[in-house]
Amino acid sequence: MPAYFAPLVGFSIGVLFAWAASEELTRAPGLLGSARSLALVLLFAFVNYGPMAGYFLAYATDWSLAYLVDGRHLPSALLLVGVMIDVAVVPIGFAVAAVLVRQRRLVALWPLGTVPLALAAIGVAILGRRLALHGSYAQVARGAGVDPLPGSPVGYAVLWFQLCLAAGVAWTTRELRLLSLVARRG
Image 1 (cartoon, one colour):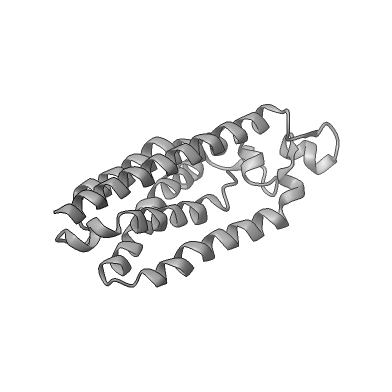
Image 2 (spheres, rainbow, N blue to C red):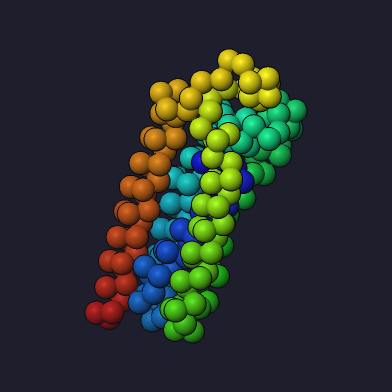
């Protein structure tokens, strides 16, 4: 996932998870409700979302930065901070949305979750031509030696990680809904 948009998508996923856990969040005491729902969100962030974002920052840095910055000149600590931000935004989105859920303001979740996704989609549309390429920063700058993303190693990684992301979101949402059903039954 492009580094510029991963935090926006992660935040929206956290909002989705708060919606999925809404019954449990409204019934359980404490700011974030049950520790079980927060544990599931953290598990997703560390096991699914963080590695996905980290892979592209580590192994396809130039592509992840849409060839706007030469990844060879970035300190590795900066890339690590990017991965830590990507891991943190999912639980942050969950926590922000959990406050609204506990106040029973579920309608407010819609813009909270969709605005970041819309911004990410606009960004991908703007940078789409660059993101459709596979090469290094120097190759893209020269316009020589660049391959199309489909069929390239990074293209296969994008496809694989998007499938893993979809499966992880679906599984986590399902488990959070099950926790909410258990909370409803009391």
